[in-house]
Amino acid sequence: MSVPRLAVTVDLVVLTVREQRLSALMWRRDRAPYAGAWSLPGGFIQLDEDLPAAASRLMADRAGLAGVPLHLEQLATYGYPDRDPRQRVVSVAYLGLAPDLPASSRAQVLWTAVDDLVHRDTAAFDHRRILGDGVERARAKLEYTSLAAAFCPPEFTVAELRRVYEIVWGTALDPRNFHRKVTGADGFLVPTGRTTTRDGGRPARLYTRGGAEHLRPPMLRPAPAR
Image 1: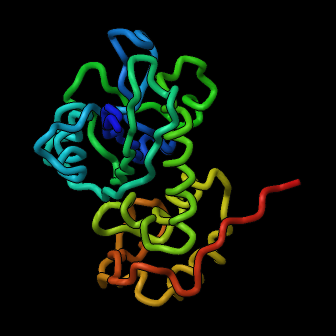
Image 2 (image 1 turned 30 degrees about the vertical axis):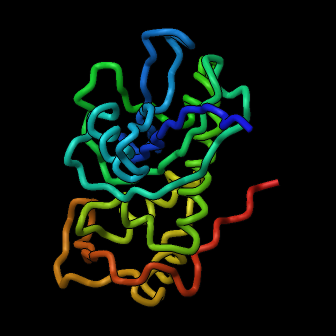
């Protein structure tokens, strides 16, 4: 029996909060197929590298974020036969998260608000689906893990953390209820003993991310309004 031939790519869903909006790093394609369409940064895996190494290489070469520290995890694998018109291609997607990421060093790569992307028709391949899966993974993980702190600077206020939840979830949260929940979650926040007035108003306490990976109790998303 002959061995099927296929290619393997790594595609990157890189999310951050810029100008108070959840934003994704997008690549404007300049060649066929889908010339002129937006796509996720990514590329083909090399024969001598494993998946994490390919993700790190493409984060530098295609995303233009060499040496930038960020949370990176494998998202999902996409392999239905007609996803690439050139040949059979299996894609392994990675999700990257970090606070206030800088502009890419690549001219073809731009930060774009996620809300703007989902309404565009010019998506390459199945990248709209992959992006949607990455955004939903981030939203879901905010409920039961400390991942929201990955969108914050090393020291942050509860109000800054709340804005991350509001931006990623796309809904307003009650400040007092939120404060009670996050400060009551075991190992989520660690007080620094310092304060800041950068939020405006009275000095606010600064916190760092604690050692807890899972939130107990979880931070459940508000039910959508009917």
